[in-house]
Image 1: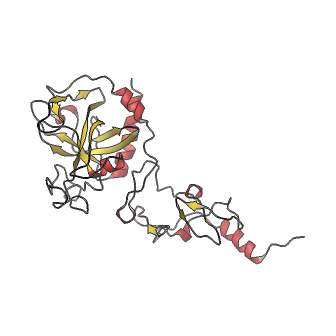
Image 2: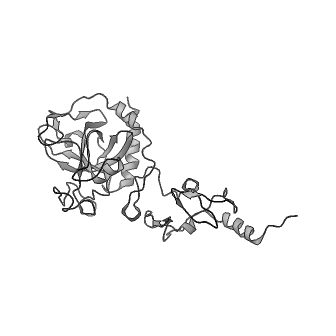
Image 3: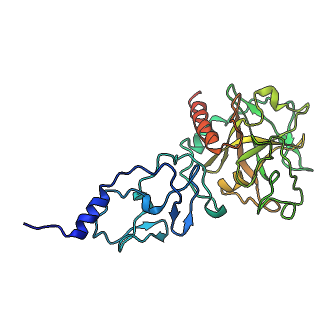
Length: 297
């Protein structure tokens, strides 16, 4: 009869350890980078190990980085994920860097098909930029208003590494809507869109849109959920925050970034995220409303 070694027995005991995370885990590291996690973080040592891993497994990889584990490594795809992490979260930031998540469960193509036809709700058209022709209407359906335009970068609000008076000649330290603590929004971290200030052409407030309304912003095959966070000039449309552009793969540079066309902004009527800075709530609400929108033909 073969008797397991003490080392193998110890490994087996570790694999059978409870998978629950500590109530307030102090730190969680991917490679050498700590990743923020809703009120705390968790150590790699506290991650439950899938039972499929064997003591003699040669190794697995965490993204492009190898994570040492008793002579081996493990793929990120094989790690169990805490339930507090949601697939729709737009990202957490290890040391100020964005982490890519799976993105929207509603396809960009389905949203674009839903807004193919335009029933204008504006009493005129908007310009992409100062000095350009006014050719962009705001369109409407029963559930949403939308427009198809360019994307200029809004870097206003709380100053940061990328958004400040030194990096953006047009920088303003204020935003039309503020966080729950009264501070301006953070354009670097919060995906938000800019609507034109109310005018005779269009008043967004008359169409169920306000600060915190949820938007789906579509560029190529990507969908990013955002909130209405700022207002712009009365005659120009097509602007979103640094974080929105970054998430869509558009250059977020406030001077030379953005894109000249190909962005669709869909704002869901009578929707609202409270507090306005809650990115996870914007994603959850946006996903739900987007699914309803594409299914409401």
